[in-house]
Image (cartoon, rainbow, N blue to C red):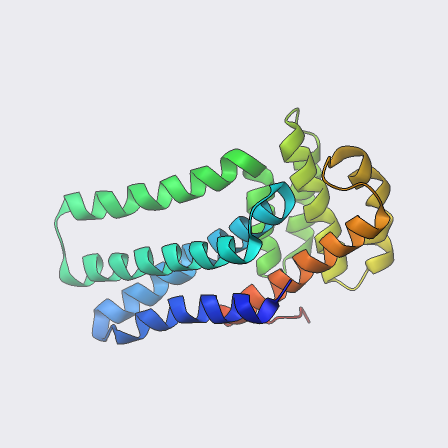
Length: 203
């Protein structure tokens, strides 16, 4: 796990928006900020838990979110026609739906809350995810809860969940693997926050 790579990749995608000026630039920044961090965190966590390259997933989500955010700015600032606006909205929906389909609405919402240091909402959503009949949603909920406790400095509480995680997550065979995965998720979350001007560590 190399958080600096995440930071570099995400930083480049955000820097691409710097060329926007005036009202178009204002809208572009808003568009990127709204969806990009949720996509970056969701993509990163989903790849880390279920397989794939977490760094690539986080960077791809950020590039996607930033690019569509810029498109939104151009559309709003230039009053482009309805077809362009609909295409932008469809692309955003496709991205959200893809992540939600894998981890569920509750885990997705909880990860977005966690990115903003809203631990109470993150844990509440994690609990709801764990009540699901979908095994993947349950796994995502368990990791979300463990990550939320870890993010608050309650590492012993997070580690107490390893037994349930090992019993549920087919990719985690023992506590050592669970510990490594938790640290990977925590490091990635911190770096992604930093790229979106949020506190890396919650106060």
